[in-house]
Length: 115
Image (cartoon, rainbow, N blue to C red; front, side):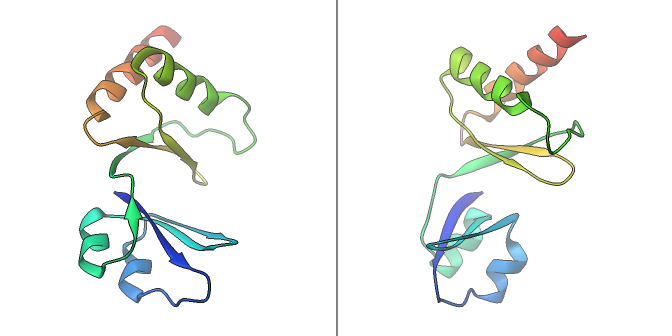
């Protein structure tokens, strides 16, 4: 996955929309999270190659501190920053490529501590 950008006023290619994991409308234009292969194929500006980790916990959209606790721990334990996104049902962490296994192990350790 990568984060990509379509400038304001520019029409996105339909394949970018259909391949998007998430789309954000921002002042500067559209931000998309898409597979890296799609970004490379279409030539769209992109950065931050990453893996998506979905947290299989249905957290309330108004929950306080859940993602903050996770991301704080990941920075403290692994020195790994992540991009976090909340969907309607699940939270998602976009983790730098090559760090996903270490992040998964840390998440498992956190879950075990909560039991």
